[in-house]
Length: 300
Ligand code: HPA
Image: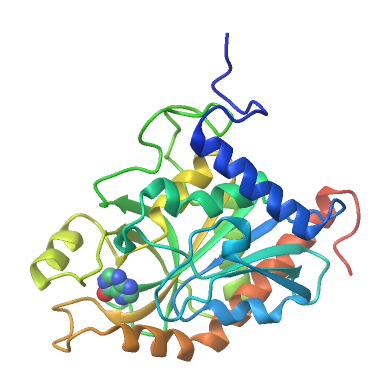
């Protein structure tokens, strides 16, 4: 009987593409590398990768990752250590979206390859519009759940059992332990970090006010055009997921102002200092937890 869980060989074109991309990443980082965390940096947030120490980068086309044509997305994978610790991180500066014409299987190929290359934690970041009252541009929000409104799934089609189960559980997509860790870091750094439900829409047009009223009645606090497919694929493969949105605008109809991508990238840049503080703190806590788990002490 074939196992529905993680076998080691790829059995489909998707599995083979993941395997090949992961191989190129492993070749780039070297046999002794132990990357633990993958950071996916959304619109206007890509600069965070410059904080990694001993960093080296590789262009997406050299890995076989799809390249994004969206302004604010650089298209390189950076390998380095988290600031102030030895935690090895792979950071994606930019991602592709379904609205660019890619299938969801293509959209999630990079995240799958990063998990296959060894990353156990996938930290997804994005720019999002605020739906819930009280959320303001510039604020960071921890994702506690999502609504998949893309009308499709990255898991549609033949399931490759070497990647994960046919019917994976999605009860707790955004890992409870990591969320608690992020909340501890935020409170220690005196950062506000409310949690919210993210509605993933196809785009690329921003929503209408009527659509935002609908999303609000469905329980969404935030809206964006990314993250959901990647979170599903990472869970499918058994990785732990953490999601952080940077609110870049009030969603359509909540403010009378028309929305623009320039506003999105500018506001994300303004939230930079808080974003850096939060991510630095999260990575250093993950590093400390890992040292404890590996039998060391939690002091550097
Ligand atoms: N809607 C959808 N995606 C977004 C938004 C928005 O208001 N802001 C940033 N990404």
